[in-house]
Length: 381
Image 1 (cartoon, rainbow, N blue to C red):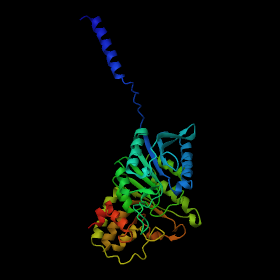
Image 2: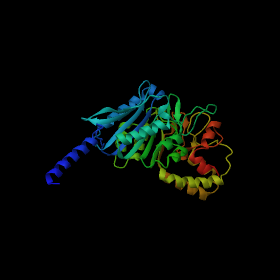
Image 3: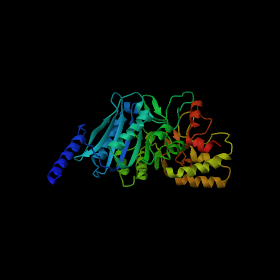
Image 4: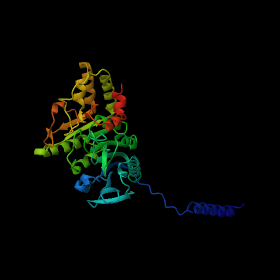
């Protein structure tokens, strides 16, 4: 075969291969470059917060922050479900020195879908595809009752996190939906999430957790101040906590109300080990009178974790081990003197975390409590 014929055959082969590769007229794959960090707000506003417009007020704060953001190497997304609208994944981005909302995806508007493990996982997978990053942060925005299935002793309505038309998401489902080593932090802009049971349930999925042991004001944190903290080379969660606390602590009357804490989740296994030792020989608790609590109405579900554990520890050595482990885990804690002017907080007995004491709640609550990691690893002696 001469060189000319070989050349012709080579050209024909290349054309044939090229034709085959494009035979399905497929769109070329678009590769989205990876940014340094993507922060997601999971905003469930089909409740009184949305009805009163607090979601839009916070969206405006987010737009203010992104309108001022000149870095360009971080992205800010909001999964938002509100009344009478299709759930959407929105990116708030800076274009021409102003913030714009860009809809990345519309979701099927199924009732209660936003508080299911399936939708939560779907949104996480979507942000990893549409806004890939070396690191991710998560903000939980909605009503919450922490780990509790109901804050009322005679009612077993599901509560937990994220009220969507009356339904909420159990904390274990939330933890199960989170992939490991994806989100470096969770900031819970929702009530009662600052519980040892919640932080411990999430410990394997995140590095740091911000939560409040008590109720939060409806307008939550100041996103315009805190988003720059989330975008720092290392997320400055300590400053974000201080920003939130300093704002509310500067107010007067019933508006001066906040509890907040920052938890290092890598320290929680050691803390649990010490607590297991304490509970295995705990002094019997004859009364909860005098214990600091964090929900304003009966029955009490959220007692101070540090005060309670020190009370039941049988000796000073155990107390010393516990307080050292607690100090390692709770990086920052702060509280105003009262919650909404009606629930006094003794700062000396504020450890930054709440805990449940068995026998205080409904049967439904206690049955669910037995399934949580904290009960199984610490209390189930």
